Length: 295
Image (cartoon, rainbow, N blue to C red; front, side, top):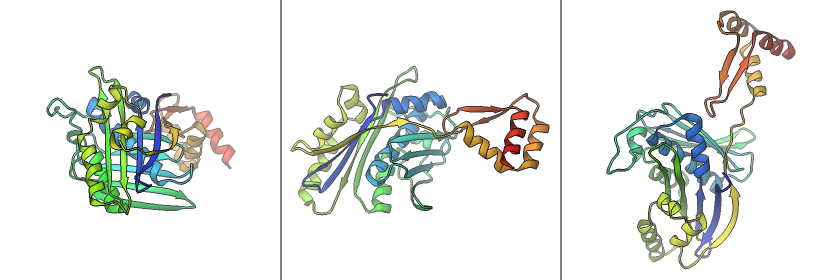
């Protein structure tokens, strides 16, 4: 995943904020862990990249967290992605094996996501502070829906272009995109020029497959130049651990744990993290020891 990174930039005297990323490795890891079918890979990957882009624009501290929750009513079910200020992201999808017929030779993302539902973004800013914005889905294509959220909930006109190119063998060849945010002070002529360049831009995955870097994607949008800010790595990461599940066992209470031990037919109780599909096994002796240690 060493080529996975995100760049921040400004243009037009800091009246435009720009972000671009290559997340091919991140989306490949999401696909591997959840065994997603192609259209679901694209939907989950787009949501993950959107979460990373919005996190880069809005989270001020590494420990802060952002959650994107998509409920579109489609066969893929609910999509939930979390990203933090360190550029770490994880996600889950209700039905990884959902399928919808391709449209004009392209993956039918809205077909698996659905377009009759809602997209929510929740920011967990620490000290128990959290803020949530929810909008109706426009298309189920994710990028336009995230742009609509940014306009409606954060009053920031934005263009979000994210894409995933999936090979016939289900592997991810390219995943990446950009987010352009227009700040106060731009003239109508400047806005129209930016919008036209974005409209003329090839699909993000085509740019990446042609060898373009995130910096070069921004050069296509701002040929007059831009000021590059920092560049930071992004990666799939799930903070689950055996210790966390031990705490969860304790929280069930003594009676419930004893019931599980008595009813379990297998020699181990298996607990699976829905975000990363890592499994943790606990024997009856271990579960009783966890309870004993918590007393």
